Image (cartoon, rainbow, N blue to C red; front, side):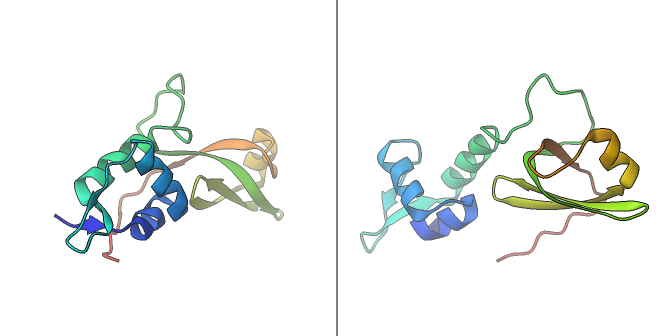
Length: 132
């Protein structure tokens, strides 16, 4: 079972090392000492914590419309670039930056603009996972 340092866990969770330390000190995230005496988080525990955290402040509200799309990200629009027919919309959802190409008409109908809260839904037939 892999284990992670505070810095590695922070990068994976998209937060600072100090935040991970506070979570551990507050009992939210379990840490043990490795053979060298350094604080370490076991991989399974980190995965559970990440999943629980994913259901937190950035989760799609329960009363949202039913959908088959399971990858939903609540975020804020950070940029909108519109031309005659198409538009590019950038959304920051927690640590995730999503970019969507939609029609100009959709941007106008939805009233999309910088600062608007949206839910980005991602559905793909191919998902690639690379080891880091």
